[in-house]
Each structure stands twice: as C-alpha cells, then as structure tokens.
Image (cartoon, rainbow, N blue to C red; front, side, top):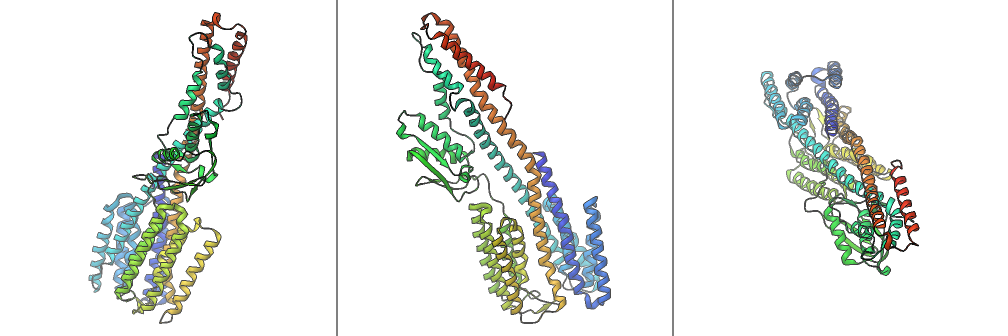
Length: 567
C-alpha cells in the first residue's frame, strides 16, 4: 500500500499549507486592529497590507517549492518577536504566527516539533524584555498548541488510513467469497447444468460392486458445509447456511429461504459474527421464506441486531473490534468544553470559575455521549452529534455572555459567545456533506440565532473595530473546511488503488469458483469414462450409446465454458 501512504503524506501537506494562510491572516488582522491607535490608522493599514502580502508570498512559495525548515523557523521566530515587542500586552495574536510551522512539523515528526515553541518563547520573551514589557507565556503556549494539534491530526490520519485498509481488506474477503460462490453457481446451479447431466449419468454406470451415488453429490454436500474463516456479507453468510440446512434432509417442509433486504444484505460481518449467526440459526431452526433486516447497521466488528422473520438475533461485538471509529466531532466538542474554562481568565471574559467549570463538565459529558453514538452508528450519527454540539454551544454562549465581567481587552469589546463559534461552526462545516437539506437549514438557523441573541445580551455596545474578532471563527471554519477536504483527499488518494484490488479479488474469486467446479467435473468425467471402459461388458448394452452421448456432451460443455470470455 505504498500509494496509500503517499496519498496520506500529500493530504497532510495540503492541510498544513491551508492552515498557514488562514491562521496567519487572522493573526495579522487582530494585531493591526490592536495597534490601530498606537500606530495611527494609516500606518496600521499599510502594515496590515504589507504583512498580508508577505504571508501570501510565503504561501505561494510553500505551495510551489517549499521553504527549508531552518529558514522558516528563523523567519517565524523573528516575526513573533517583533510583533510581540510592538504589541506588549496581550500578545496572543503575535504568538500564533509560529503555530502553523509547529503544526506542520508535528504532522511529520511528532513531538520533536516542540523545538518551535521553545525557540519562539525564548526569543520573543527576550524581545519583550528589551522593549520594557513583562514576560509572557503566550509565545510558548500557542505554538505548543500547534504541536499538540499536529500530533493529534497525524495520529488521526494514520489511524484513519489503517481503518480504511482494514475495512477494505474485509470487504475484499467478503466480495471474493461472494464471487467464488457466484462462479461455482454459474457452472453447478441452474437448469440442466453439466453437474446435473453428469450426476444423472452416474447411476447408468452402476455395475456390480460399484457405488451408485455420484461423487458430485458428496461434493455438493461438502460445499454446503463449508464455514467462513473471514469476513462475509450478510447475504452470503445466510446463503451458505441455507444451502447446508436444505441439503441436510430430503424433508422439503424444513427448507428455508432467506430474503435479506438490499441494504441489509451488504452488511459486513466479522468472522466471529458470521460464526455467531450460524449458531443462532441452528438454535432458531427457521423454515419457509423469511425476510432479513438489520436494525441500525453498525461498522464492522460492532454489535449488530438482525430481524429474521419475526425473531430478533443479536450478533455481539468482537472482543477487539476491527474498526475503531475515527471522528473529529466528539473531539471538537471536548476541546470546546475544555476551552470554556478560558472564560474565567481576567484578560478574557471574567466569568465566575464555578460557572466555567460547570460548562466544561457539561461539554465533556456531551462529547462522551457523542463518542458513543459515533462508536455505535458511525457516520449515521453525525446529525445527532451536530445537534448536541450546537446545543452545548448555545448554552456556553448564553451563560458566558450573561455572566461576563471583563468588557474589553486589547482595545476590543469582549464577545464570549465567539468561543462557541470556534467549535460549533467548524463542526457544522465538517459534517455539512453528511446532512440533508432540512438539517443544513436548521444548523445555519441555530448558529444565526445564537449570534443574534448573544449580541442582544451584551452589556456594552459593539463598535466597528470589534468585527475583527470574527476573523477567529472564520479562520477556524476555514480550517475545518480544510480538515474535511483533507479527509476527502486522504480517502481519494487510496480509493483508486483499493478499488483496483477489490475488482481483482472479485475476478479472482469468480474464476477460482468456476475453475474448482470445472476441474471437478473433468475429474469425474474421466472417472466415468474409465469406468465405462473397464465395466463395458457388465453394463446394460442399451445404456451404452446414451452414456457415451452424455459424456461427450459434458466434455463439449466444459470446453465451451473454459473458452468463455471473462465476465
């Protein structure tokens, strides 16, 4: 899977470059608005335009050729130091200028990227001291956050790739098994097949001391008794059990025919679940024609609940499920919950700590619930997870806005409700492609309602300069879009190769199934010809022409089947 790994590498580079531009531009706007009065408006505006142009040029260089890491580190650290010395307090926005590099290095090299925040923190604090400002942890903490984010996203992507490959392997096994059955049935099943013709011919060769039953009858029984030691589609697992059950007795009243629905038939079962299904069917002893449905199909290896006729069958979760879910939604809610504690900081919103702690606990509980929903339902849980995330965002926004005591910081009016936008809006963007039209409209209406109500609740009026605070939700939203694009790019990077392998497995299974039956038919035909030659004198002479005609017909049919083009 080298191509898959290269695709994952391309996707991580893609998200790193996208993050660089939107986070840097958001920082530039915040810095220049903070320094609007100290620098005078014309100077601040020119500084903003020049710094944004610089970021765009660096962005283009990163996309085209790349910049050596030592050069980028020197440029970013100098950037942070200069703007920190100019701003003085607060310096959160200047400190974030080094976060994209920290994030990108963490994606590729893990925790060794901590060299970025350590260097940034040291140099920036020297610059603060020279300029006469007090020391600040921000140049260390914000790039360190970038490192943590890069490590998490890197592990997420590698885990997601492993998950995709595991599921693809299970799907290939199941598809090959189904194709193999189809290949066997193309020769052995149907009206007057070569197997039927040879089976009817065998009793005519029953001379003294010879068995009457055809070897093909025993083969059919062995085929029905085969058990799967790999993942199976539900429809194939049911068909295997159905054939074994129906061939076990000549009593037609005990026969069964399973009719899985289209969606349920393609449900993927692990080997342990396939065995559990067969054991459950033995206990139920079903008869007649039965419809089979799956209640809320879950990912491979998770608990599955089936409805077979009027009876419920539960397939337990594997001891170690093969496909642990990877979903950014619960993580986004959890990070938002932890971030709710920042409302209590004096330089932020000054919300009483007990209220912030209650918000954090509530958000973590919502994140835990969301994680369990994703664990059970996969992507089908996205709508409910988004609804829960928006509800928590509304509670956080209303509580923090109602209890805020710090009205302004860094020359801007504090807007506590923007914290909810930092996770609620990105969560909406990440899940957007999984939602129907009605749910999309409801999500947008919910976000708009939160903003309108909280703006009305603010104890002080907003000024035009306060709109600069919106760059952060916008930056995070663009970042979330980049993450979703990243996941799609990561998927498309491996899908082509996996699709080719899947098609090859299906073709191999079908041809293998056909070849197995044709080889057996040829062996039994040769055995019948040998018996005809050895026992010719003891056989009824009236049967001899018919036996020879049938054996010749079998050979002709087998030859024709072997020369058929591949399906």
